[in-house]
Amino acid sequence: MNRWIRGVALACALLALGATTGCGAESRADANADARPAGPSSSAPHTQPQPQPSRGEDQDPRAEVEAAYRKWGLTPPAAPPAPPAAKPVELRAGDGKVPVVSEIPTKEKIVFLTFDDGAEKDPEFVTMMRELRIPFTMFLTDAAIRADYGYFKKLQALGGGVHNHTLTHPDLRTLDASAQRQEICGQQSRLKDEYGTTPRLFRPPYGNWNEDTRAAAASCGIEAIVLWRESMQIKNMQYQSPTKKLRPGDIILAHFRGPSELKGTTITEMTANLLRHIQEQGFTVAALEDYL
Image 1 (cartoon, rainbow, N blue to C red):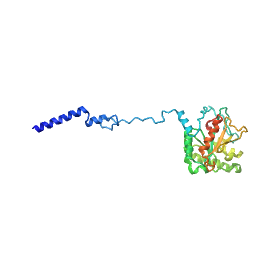
Image 2 (image 1 turned 30 degrees about the horizontal axis):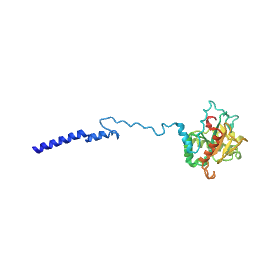
Image 3 (image 1 turned 180 degrees about the vertical axis):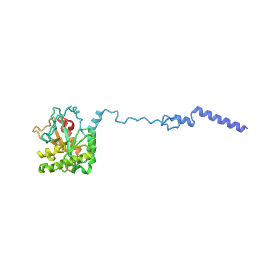
Image 4 (image 1 turned 90 degrees about the vertical axis):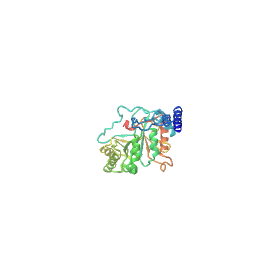
């Protein structure tokens, strides 16, 4: 009996000590409740954790763009003006032939970037266009892009317009009317199948065209033939104007070319050089499709 009484007394003493020091199992769990999320319980409703904002959600969008331009060694340009309520170029085909356009009539200090062919498929160019958010238009040749249609879908997803540059990149002036129509209409169908939209604009390879080209383009659903006023080389631009300067509304030609064609220069380096020329002359880039 004395042994039983002593055991009960010892148990009571231990319980009293745990109550005063908070060292019981449930007390430890309570102390850690703020340190880890509680698991689901059959007696309490399960609630989803609240989503946390990502690192960039509360950033100033302008600051984000400026950081991207610094990454590429550039200064952010001025924002382009709002597109005009009415497009300044008449696209209605007269006498069954589409108009030929080399610049957009405007007084705004804007120019338009266009990239031709599609031979170079540098993933860094996709990154550059995504980060810099530059409007651009593509004139694609099937012979150059068919090995990787998906590459240009990534650029299309960034807002790049997809337009026609023939199936095989011939000098159209050497072809009769029927062969020209095959080159243009064939590429219309191919681009629609691959990219989901029928191109409105057409650029003839080498800038060579004749009246058969205008008629063939119209018959294929093209609204305008688009040429250019400047062409970008590696570091410098070639100007058609004797002033050797950009003018409001100029359309600039560049190509999907890589180091093998640009003497070791990448397409992103060439594009950075192009953007510097534009900014140095006080211009900014707008979307061609907003004006044409």
